[in-house]
Image (cartoon, rainbow, N blue to C red; front, top):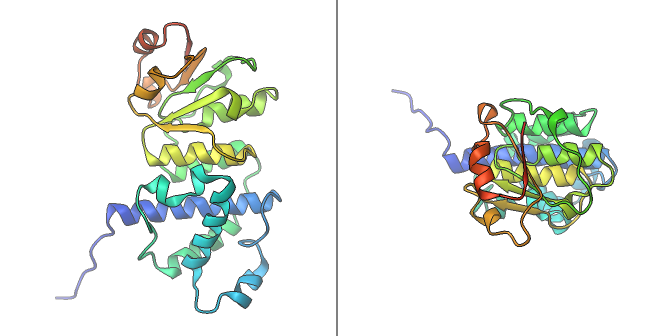
Length: 244
């Protein structure tokens, strides 16, 4: 009987999904002029001159290490995926294909880019009713619930120019995919440095947050939200609860 290859492990599947998504985000940053063109360097000419025996996976790891210096939350792969050397064993041929796909991806807007990331990460289950989100002021403190990965914050910051992600929002996440998407929201908005993004599936951290929150935003349960409004009102007594 012919030999059959075993399916990839969950860790390998996560690593592949993470890297394909991260490469798309890095290519977008190069398209926007916020990073030196490396993935978009025609024929990877500079890399080809200096790479020696290094392959596509090595290039991807170097690009991520460089990006993680200023934007660690989406690009520090070991932290996001929870293990060291997460890309060990990924074939260079696959990494090279993801690089080509990333270099040809050109969404027209940040919203389209985030939708594409969300779809790739399995998070685009229903479109939030963005029109129902409240206007914020600079002194407000908003919590985004697990489930949306920062997309609600992105909409508010894009449509309310006086609101800054780092100043106003805390984004709670339940999975590494949500955590990565929240980090990519910060990248897409041009934020450098840490943003308040936390793995907090049951909101234990948020409920203990110093100063509390004035607003709590999240998805309705029928759109994938994890919490009902009455439950949230019991935890965040003084906050305006908005599920969209």
